Each structure stands twice: as structure tokens, then as C-alpha cells.
Amino acid sequence: MKSIAVFCGSSEGASPVYKECARALGLELAQRGITLIYGGAAVGLMGAVADAVLEADGQVVGVIPHFLKTKEIEHRGLTELIAVESMHERKLKMSELADGFIALPGGPGTMEEFFEIFTWAQLGLHGKPCGLLNVNHYYDPLIALFDRMYGERFMQEKHRAMLLEATTPQAILEQFLRYSAPPVKTYLTEERT
Image 1 (tube, rainbow, N blue to C red):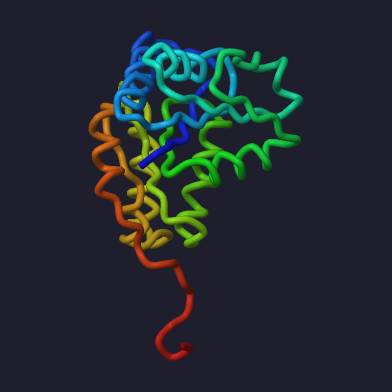
Image 2 (spheres, rainbow, N blue to C red):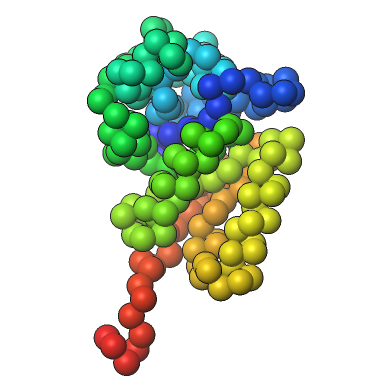
């Protein structure tokens, strides 16, 4: 695993534990020689994870749309900053550059990015691991929703198992190293194949 995309908030959240976890993830990535791929901002958890990687002499590639360069305050100290035209291009570029995807706490933008990349995995567009870093029980309600989707038969068991989750950077990265993508989702039945 050479690179991991991290989706996270452009704010630091209500508790200092979120920033501490973002920094811990950044340090762990740098120590393992894994390049951080992220949204390119200098603020919030985005800035915290990037700064931690850089402070530990790691590599950071930011991907930011032109219109957000001033709103999110682009990070000017990165290994590389890629400017793109749209949010769609940002997600596509991040997906091309990353070998896996982690969501730290964040708001609707973080959820939208994570859900799209998870859906791409479910559809077989990539076979890369997707995980939630569930610091401070932030993602407990989302994990419960995934369990409900499975229980109500809106998600197959093999796809529910694709959602990796851990409370520490070390634990989520160890899961990523052991990850094997399930067979591609299909709606065909044996009679139709």
C-alpha cells in the first residue's frame, strides 16, 4: 500500500480528540511510508493530517478544485498540489492516486466523498479498501445504519463486510493490509446467466 486518500472535515470539530486522531493518522502514514492523498486544504482536520505527515518527512498530495482554493485555504507546503476544475474531478483524481480510502470525522462533504467511493467499490469499479476511523464513537450511527441496510436486505453480507472500521490509525491500516475485495455485485440470477 503506497498511498491512502483521507476524507475529513475542513473544521476541527467540537472535541480536540478529532484533531489528535487526524495528527496520529498522519504520523502513522508517514512512518509507514504511505503517501497521503487528500483535499488540499490547510484548515481543519484536513490541515492537521497533512501537517502531521509533512512534519514526519512524509509525502502529501493535495487535490483541490480551483473554486475552493480560497474558501478552504489551499495548503502551500505540500509535496504536490493538483488543481482541478470540479468536485467530480477531485474525487476521480483522488481515486486514481489512492490505494485505499479512510474517512475521519467530517460533515456532509466527507460523507458524500466516502459514500461515492464505497459505492464504486461495491460495483466493482475498484477493489481498494474503504474504512471509517471511528474516533470518539463519531461513526457509531453510520455503522448502525449499514447494519440496518444489511438487516433489511438493501445490502449483501459481502458488501457489508467491505466497510472496515477501527478506532485507531494502526488498527485501520492493519485491516487495509489484509483486505481482499469481494466478487463484483450483480443482479443476475442463475436462471438468467
